[in-house]
Length: 210
Image (cartoon, rainbow, N blue to C red; front, side):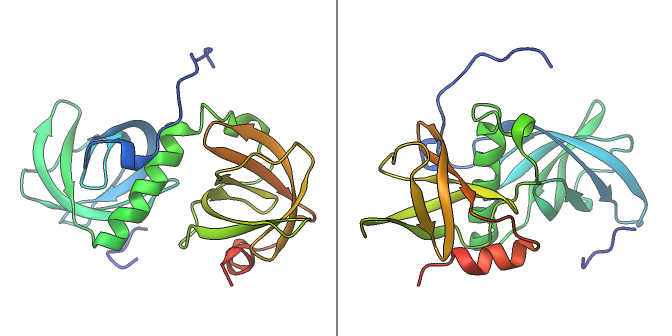
């Protein structure tokens, strides 16, 4: 119950950071979720395009222009806003969010846009999420330290934007987590933690700088 509070081959494409996209440009995604209209009726939905400011939603009941919508979306979480246009098979909505929430949504959309490039779905043992605080640091065994930005995390590892590319298998410390480099990609590296964790909240605490 929602509450208001609460296979075919792909052609590789370059990774994009959200800063490289025009402001509020929609990203093509395929995100499932549920939404609630003003009368508190709930329905399943799928988001086909989304930006930090708006979304295109496939929905069985379209609502009316100007109607408030609350939705819970896989990988994104709770969003709310107003229907701006009723379209065939769904609606477009404008998202109401604080600047911090928009920044977090931008990071989530960057991950969704790039996850096929990184081949993330096929080899991931645990669900990946975008952390609340994406800033951390990587320390090599020789003491060199580099600031980094976390793309996503799981109980077993993380993908990070990093200016350097330590060799595969290199031991590193990400925040306070011991890990090793297991993959390179254009914007950074993927690391595997020395031991799998039990709670994502613990992972996020241990990845914070300082």
